[in-house]
Image 1 (cartoon, rainbow, N blue to C red):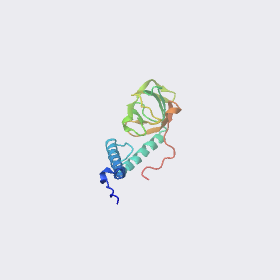
Image 2 (image 1 turned 90 degrees about the horizontal axis):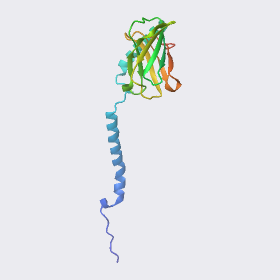
Image 3 (image 1 turned 180 degrees about the vertical axis):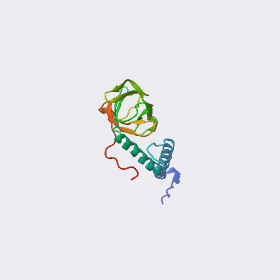
Length: 181
């Protein structure tokens, strides 16, 4: 007669450990994902949709005002992305404070707002000359550039594709919907 085989205790067998490794890895990965999501807040997520929806109507009114005043801006950005020359035409007060905004498409921390300074040339044809100096813009494929009055009455903006050159024209949006509709 043969002797019965002694079976190993379960924790000395490899298969239970291999089967438990899958769920253990998932728990560790989920914990890491939660930690990353909690510490790196995304600027792309909007917290208050209703408030932002009301704000959009205000923005449309600013675009319509720029359209009514026929305001346009030509922006020339230095090759080092740390200065700009801006030519603005249309019906606006050239003595009022005017800002230029560079908005990163994903990282709000990289956004910059700079007050334009009247250029030494003043009036050039039908355009007023301004200039701005700012921190060098971090590398990005594109930026949103906006020129607006400090009082928030009008704005012109467009997307700047960096690989297409350092000059862009900002115009009021075409075919705007009626504000409040």
